[in-house]
Amino acid sequence: MQVQPLEFEKPIVELEKMLEELEIHSRENAVDLDVEVARIHQKILETKQDIYSHLTPWQRVQIVRHPRRPFTLDYLNIIASDFTELSGDRLFGNDHALIGGFATINGRKVMLVGQQKGRDTKENIYRTFGCAHPEGYRKALRLMRMADKFHIPIVSFIDTPGAYPGIASEERHVAEAIAVNIREMFRLKVPIVAVVLGEGGSGGALGIGVADRVLILENAYYSVISPEGCAAILWKDPKMAPEAAAALKMTSPDLKALHLVDDVVPEPAGGAHHDWQAAAESLREVLVRHLDELEKVPVDDLLDQRYAKFRDFGVYSEPASSKK
Image (cartoon, rainbow, N blue to C red; front, top):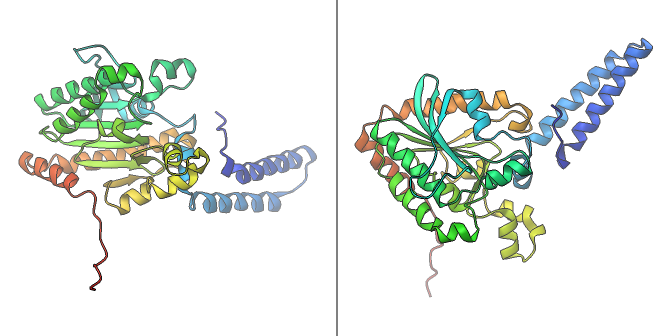
């Protein structure tokens, strides 16, 4: 399937078009243009290397929002040998923006919870654009408690702009649902690995984000607010979103440097949307490695380390006060 290029990828597209035209001309006119073809091939490789190794925070945000980027179910279709979805929170209803159920990854049974977006307008309405209502978070907690009861590790896939912001969500106490999840996830006695697949937005992400290991895909982001929202507040201008994305330190390199995530999952050149299979295999490798490590940790140590991990967040320094 043809992948729609992003604005900063246009130099690559132009070179690929030039290469295609040159190959057609060579074939139709029986002209030897191997030297020129090889030169353009090399130029394409160099241009890709230059662009993809110097991505700005805002360009990473654009990659994350690409309409062909794989979502939770897309990854599960590749890395899980089976997935049995479980529905409902047993209190109000079933939220289609947050899915969950049993899955088997590399022969290991896990409980999977994750946000799911839609591919088109109809599916996005059905999935509320990956923004879960309170019943979604309560469903996730119900499934995580089930995993705890049967000693099954938990994997959460985070991919949401945030929790659903509508009146119905507030009426059913979305803030309380997220807060309870955060509290209860600290108490679960099984290994938990959270993976930020795309957008990791605010409390909507934190509601399934308390984990022994927090992983993030190379081009994903994790932030208290969207770049547009931050720009609207600080500069009163959403067009300042690129500056806000840089200031928020929301991308994987910054988050790793700040010790807010434990590992960065490599993506194919240009982003996961260019090669779903390669992206999923990369995720599988890192995910399995961390699950293997966590299953060797005694339960008491696991709980203590999880608590200490989040208590250590927010390191800061202050200049020494000058003496008068």
